[in-house]
Length: 138
Image 1 (cartoon, rainbow, N blue to C red):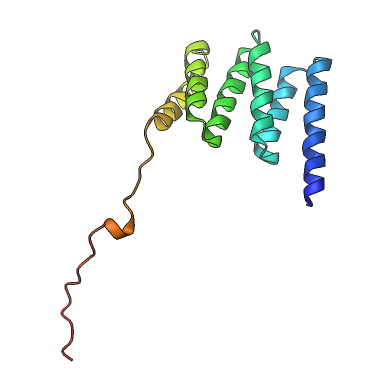
Image 2 (image 1 turned 135 degrees about the vertical axis):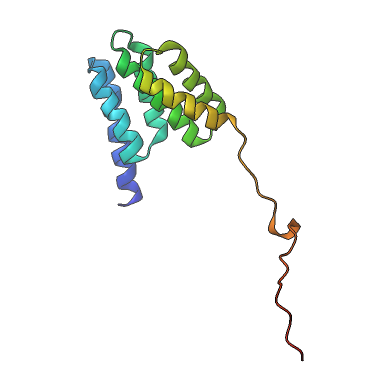
């Protein structure tokens, strides 16, 4: 797919998502569009934006709002924004305690994002391995 075609697809999906909010499309359809943007298009920015709109406007449909909040935090974590991701996971845990599966997953990911990444020492600072085999005589 050429670059201009990719941009056209992204622009079209963005326009559709804005239109769907203006028309008052159901939150379930918006959630599907967010999932499509995240998983199929790989456009985390658009997915974060869609999930944020769903979480902000949905109070009656708690399962959808909880899933949108969780997915938004997960996208932020994939982008490397650990601070905002942790805030999102904490929001899932505190605001949607009735959604036990998502809360458990959010707690798991919150613990993983809170831990610092393991770093290995560079190879040149590690001690060399010594061979136990004797060298043959010359």
